[in-house]
Amino acid sequence: MTPASAFVSEVANELSTWPGVTIGRRVDEAAVVSYGHIELGLLYPEQSVAEIHFLDAEHDELIEEGEAEPAEASPDSTGVSHSLHGPSDVTAVLELFDRRYREVRGDDGPYVSSDPA
Image 1 (cartoon, rainbow, N blue to C red):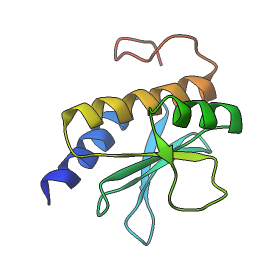
Image 2: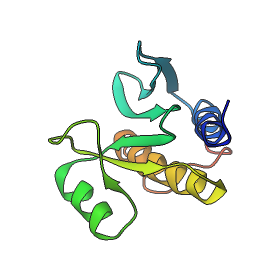
Image 3: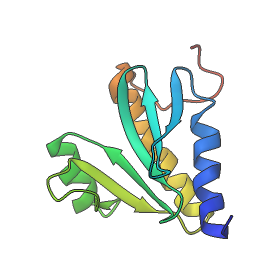
Image 4: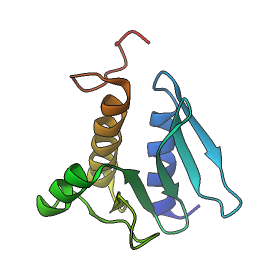
């Protein structure tokens, strides 16, 4: 495991503790992060990149504010991506996943481990 892919593993380990979140694997080794039947995003260990799905307006806002880059997987994707090279990237990626997680759940505040399921 490369140091950068260890950061991807750290994100996956944290996400797997969130109520209702599951982590699956695709044939290409990407980790699929889902809440119920809704795909929240993907983790690419080999590229040390996370891709999180957002709707157009929020997608554009995150890119304009410099919080993420356009997703590289598909030119017409509504996802944003963020590279993982250090602890600050882990925090940033978890914040992006939290934003999407709250959107899907209909929550107002950020998830914390003491929240009820």
